[in-house]
Length: 396
Image (cartoon, rainbow, N blue to C red; front, side, top):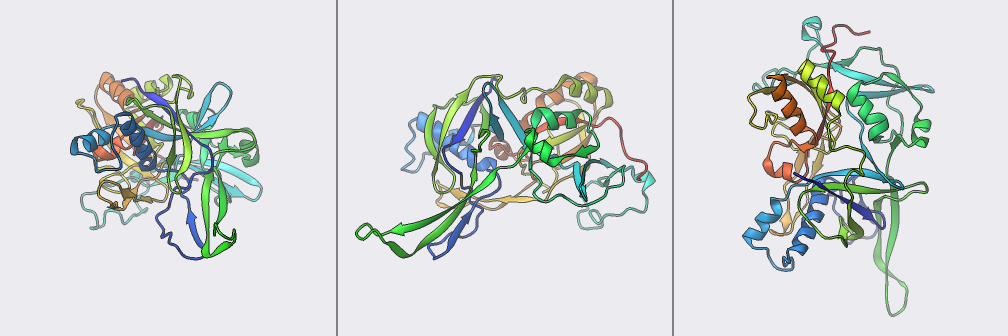
């Protein structure tokens, strides 16, 4: 299946509402989420597809029209940095990369599963009667003694080719120079853009009482580069200027030539070979996932292959939550818990080399949320990393 890459390029900052009440009151503020969830961008994509199909959004969509829109599958969004001839992907920091600052020294440590045979006194309350059907996951830790605490204002996104891909292949434990990493374009964060709005009386050109509010959005423009949101889909849409997110900020949709986004869509040969050889791997989320068990999926997809994929350990950031507005039913959507982007699953595989190779090729850059609809919406976009050194048997 051929996937087209569509770039969403905001003209101004985007406001992705965080679900807090934003009412007509003096001093009201609309604060944006730190990054658009897949539900926002897939909604914009399906709106463009509906316009192309001449759907009438001012009236209630028919059941076939609604079904057709929901059946469209999208991968993303992925933050893309625009250069002269290439789009550079930036993705969330993997959760098994533990960055700590001790004075002026910053170090990136690696979290790995602990061998339960060598840590009998380590305990967790995850299986003490609360969740009897939950697997007994291994705890995780760092083989090196960690010093310090998380740096202030740590950038959320890693350069795919320079930092993230090497971490998938062979996670290095190394000193970090955060300022140098930022300057070299290896780490970044989107800046906030705060605006104050006021209502003006047309007759007097004077501010109206009670018509003062603020919005805080995400800026996709900086002095050195522009940024956009990448979506991959096989559904055709037309390039256009349209609104996206809260406040109906304008963005431009346009199709990007294939091979422009630094090869993120295809699994690295060295990663594939290591997974087949060791029958172990890491699954890392590029977009948040919606899983039936909250922080992990009860079952991983096997794509009909006679093999098994068993989760042995999980490392995840703090959970996120998403809601939204249902245009068809004209009511709020139910709040859903997300396993955040950067979540890492340590997985053990059983099967033949050919089966594991086919599984790895199919899982790479696919959506692995537990429900079919959440996967079509873009939740749970995943890639694979190497886990070739087993469990930790000792700690520093």
